[in-house]
Length: 59
Image 1: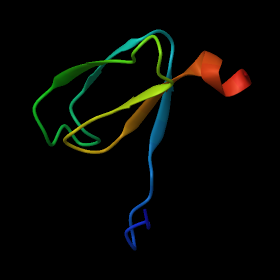
Image 2 (image 1 turned 30 degrees about the horizontal axis):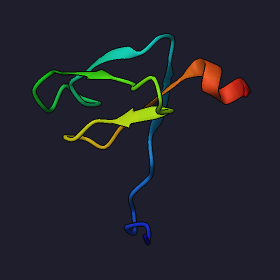
Image 3 (image 1 turned 45 degrees about the vertical axis):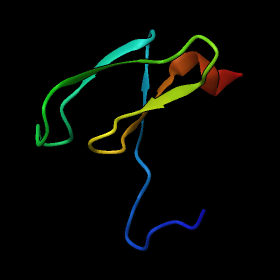
């Protein structure tokens, strides 16, 4: 899949599996996300921010 021009992927590394996201400027409803045990990250359906576990970075 090609990247959209001007779109920059945003990845935030977190401790643990759970995160609450409301966008960069609180510009969408707060949603609660959980990184699956068999996955490496989760992507917010509103703002496309990708959340990954910090431990995955060092592996």
